[in-house]
Image 1 (cartoon, rainbow, N blue to C red):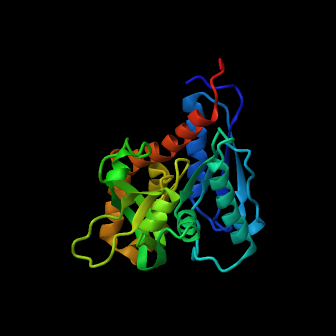
Image 2 (tube, helix red, strand yellow):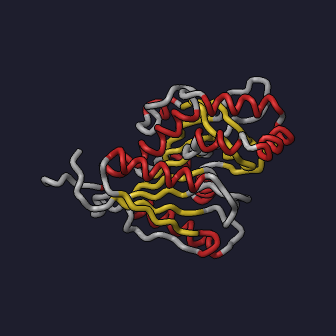
Length: 280
């Protein structure tokens, strides 16, 4: 598709609350690489939601809301109200027929959990223990047809890092919103627990994952090979988990593939829907 020469504008909603993280580096890298691959000028702006109460307006083409620390259940803080207002504003903007160019939003982990709570789509609760590492995720029948995931196998591999989980999807609320369940947690026959919801298409333009699609296999490998990180992971999760994770990060069909497919597919869809052809 031929694109105008104007910039493709991406808003990054920083939900990290000032905590050190690898996610922002990964997101910036994916956006920059996407612009180079598509040969389109891309600019991104970072909004510090939790510390500075910064929220973007409706003048961006795409929005990525990051993961972050802590309990996603709201306690009434000012930033939470502003964030939920943003979710509703963007959803309602897309509902209006006169707004022909829609706004595209991707929700990651903490942001995904908050959206599930806000739109009352499922239960969000604390896990018995942290889910940390690389895992297979299974597509639903709807997920197998979703354009975001068509470039991935079933199951496909993801990076997970969370203390909370989304479970018990409410089919009535899903139907009312027009949301679709795309992925579920790995199948564990020996564990008598409900499988967590791992991805939802909230609407045609809003999609999210409970896992980290931005996770950069190369950067993570470098990070986890540091002696201090290896020691901490082995102490918390065991040597087998650590060795499996290193192997999965080196495998081109696992995390490298997921990183190269999901967010770039989201950005490509937003780009194609946001720009009119130069000859139009």
